[in-house]
Structures are given as C-alpha cells and as structure tokens.
Length: 208
Image (cartoon, rainbow, N blue to C red; front, side, top):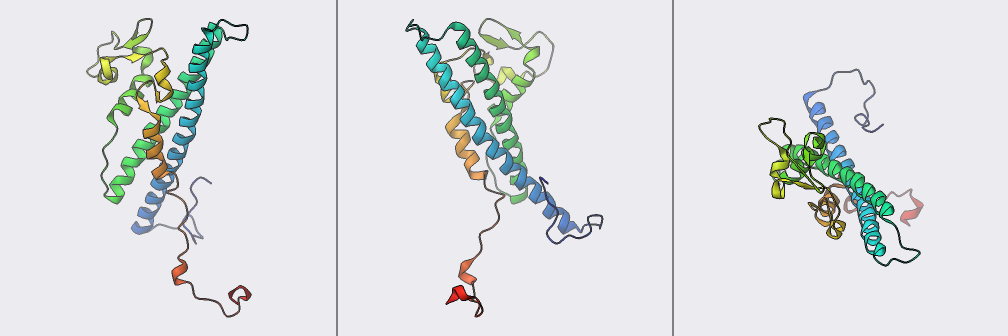
C-alpha cells in the first residue's frame, strides 16, 4: 500500500475523529512530497545522462571519423533529452505543489517557483503553440493568458544547446532542483529512536 492506515487501527470502517483526519492528511502530504522529491532526483540524473550524451554526440559529429555518430544519431538522442526533460519538469512541478501543501500545514513560508509552473503549462499545451524551425511561441488561439509569454523571450527553444546539460530546456537548473529535492526526499522516513532515553533491560544479555 502506498499510504498505510493509522497505526493500531483495527476497523477501517470506524469513523475517524477530527484529529485522526488531520493526521492522515498530514501523512499523505508528507508522503507525496517525499515521493516526488525522490522522483526529481532520479529524473534529474536521467536527464543529465541524456543531455551529456547529446552534447558529446554533437561534438563527435564534427570529427568526421568512421566512428563518428551521424545527424540521425543526434536526432534520436535529442528526442531522449526532450522526453526526460519533460519528466523532470512534471516531477519538479508535483514536488512544488506538494511543498506548498506542506507549508500550509507547517506554517512555513517558501517562495514558489513561478517559472517552473509556466514551463509546465507551456509544455502541456504546446500543441496549441505556433512554431518556427527552432522556437515555439503563443498560438493563434485567442486566450487571455499564454504561459509561454511568461518564459524568457516569450518563447520556448525547441533545439538543444550544450548548456542544456546543466538546465533542462535551458530553464530548470539541475543543481537547484536537486538541492531542493534533497530536503524533502526522506521527509517520510521513520523517526530515529531516541537513545538518550534508553533504559537498559536487566534481562538483556547485550546490556552486559
């Protein structure tokens, strides 16, 4: 089970008290935040591997040796970069949302990543955009707000740049997003026992 019931709960059909409901809500938020944080760490690593391979492939083509990759090889690895970048953006966006939910419970305050949301919205509705050879811009459809207009230059670069090994789509800095994910990745881990309050058991042979 992704989210186990309350410890000691014997009858799952029994009505929960307000305190129990609040506790379950808190545990769900913590679990989901940690889950997406771990996903961000995996997806960022996966993206970096693909982007590094694309950067190497792009450089290696110029050597023109027998072992050099082809333009078709580059096209395939760039496709992989795009898909893995998409996964990272979605994971980071979910982590952002659950972080906000966690802050509502704990009373903590942390500035949200508005650019991340705009990038996520842009990719989700990219089929409605207008395209040039290398860029996507807002489409012809009449809409009050276009997320893509909130991106730098009001456009999304569709190609690949060597600098993209450090930032997905040139916008999501891998170091920044993984540093943040590291704070949440083990939030759902069980509390460590407090050995300061440990009282030796006279029947425990390990206590000497």
